[in-house]
Each structure stands twice: as structure tokens, then as C-alpha cells.
Image: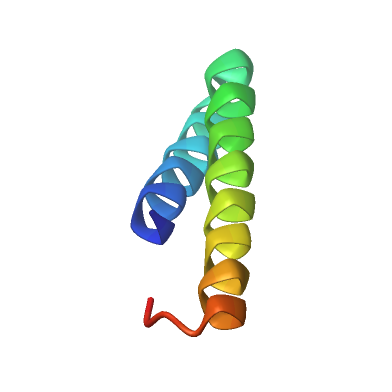
Amino acid sequence: MLGNALVFLVIAIIAGVLGFGAISGIAATIAKVLFVLFLILFVVSLVTGRRP
């Protein structure tokens, strides 16, 4: 999941450099959502004692 967030972040950066504002914004939003979801699942796994 963290890998997917990084992929969308790279897509957002490339699209931003090339001038595709809408695609860049959407990809950045997806990257943020995936990263937050990853962090939540990571914290839950630490609290419950399961290995990530």
C-alpha cells in the first residue's frame, strides 16, 4: 500500500511538471489517502500486536 502511494506521488509530480493540473491534483489526492490509510493500518497492527 505504501508502494502504491509512492507511485501516485511520482505520477502527481510528473504530471505537475508537464502542466497537467487536474491529473496532478487527483494523483496527489489518491497518494495522500493511501498514505493515511497505510499509517492507520500500521498503527492498528502495532496496537494489536500483529506483525505488519
